[in-house]
Image 1 (cartoon, one colour):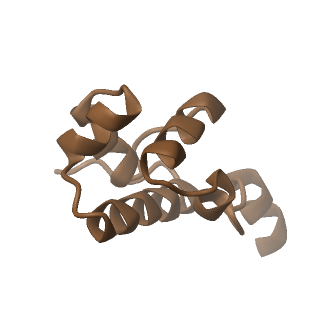
Image 2: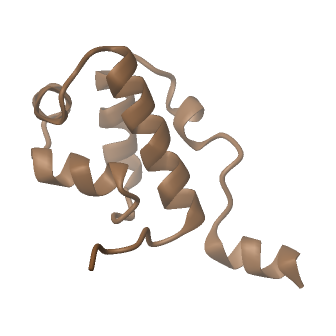
Length: 86
C-alpha cells in the first residue's frame, strides 16, 4: 500500500513542486540535479511524504525559478488545521 502524505500542507506543497517542474519540462532527476538533491527525495516531496526543511525549500524554489513564497503561500501546519476545525 502506498504511503500517504504526512499532511494536507505537505501534499499541497508537493503538488506545487510537481506542477512547476512539469511546466518547466524537467524530470524529477533534472530537478534533483539542479537543486543538489537526490531524485528519490524529490519524489517523496512531490508525494507529500517528506517534511522539507527551509534550506531545501530554498534550493527547490531556486531550481524551479520561483520565489519560495509561491510554494508555501496559504499552507497551514496540521496543528493549526486541527485548531480551526474545532
